[in-house]
Amino acid sequence: MTAVAYKLPEQYWGIELTKCLQGNALDVYQRMSDKDCCDYEKLKEALMKEYKLTEGGFRTRFCRWWCKPNKPLKEFSYRLEQYFDG
Image 1 (cartoon, one colour):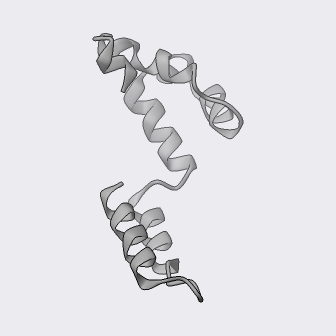
Image 2 (image 1 turned 90 degrees about the horizontal axis):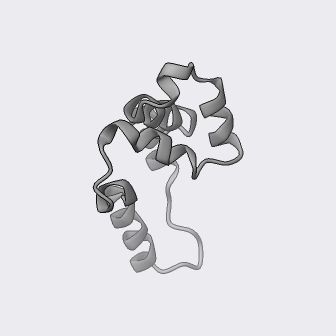
């Protein structure tokens, strides 16, 4: 994370993150209260919820994964490995 690399205090992480937002992510930010939108943890939580990066969302994605026809199993196993590491 850039904020860590630049040794930015955590209280500014939310503000720095907002500089990168666009599209739907920016809409999520704009719907938040003034107090919450600058709080990194609350902003991260709102974005993760919006993009279904929750336990339930990951469970659904995992259950939909399958080996595509005409693709090697090695590729599928690599995708699964990346999924679990991500």
